[in-house]
Amino acid sequence: MSKGPLKTKWVAPSILSADFANLERDIRAVAAAGADLLHVDVMDGHFVPNLTIGVPVVESLKKVSPLPLDVHLMIEKPERFVEDFIKAGSDYLTIHVESTASPGDVLQKIRSLGAKAGITLRPRTPLKDIEAFLPLADLVLVMTVEPGFGGQSFMADQVVKMQELSRLRREKGYTYLIEVDGGVSDKTVGQCQDADVFVAGSYVFKNDYRTAIRTLKGEA
Image (cartoon, rainbow, N blue to C red; front, side, top):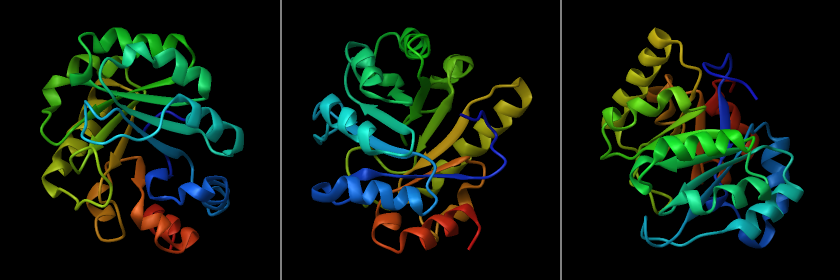
């Protein structure tokens, strides 16, 4: 797994927009179309107002996915489940700074168990809230929508966070990847060029997979 900045952009289709009755088919199809990661949103109905999948589904995804699993934990007290999600096959495991009393300890635990550790910036979370944890992060996820539901519109005022993360990485020698999630499409990707990884749900799964992925990578 590469450390940022990447020489070429990565695309991580979000399975929230896939056909849940045919997940294996859709996962293998986006992998064949050039995707780099598979983005998996885990929501507990408390930290965010929606409920999605848990450890057993991640375990099942791992068995059929040719791609590394990029698992985003939108749950309270993620330290309770870190080990379970990594045993289930999470390659990247990303938490929210607001979801735990000890973000640094959770990031270190993720790394100690052999996965890549990520931390998230929600739209209302200032960059200063995660700055102390950047040395422990393999990935920083910038959300350009409020977490909880797919299909929302891109919030352009969040672009400055990607720019600032890129500057900090360059100046301090950090190695995290910058990931962006929320309303990413052919219309918005041009504003996200400081990101290394583009998470896209609706844009990939509601279009021709190969064309959508190549467009996001700038190859179309």
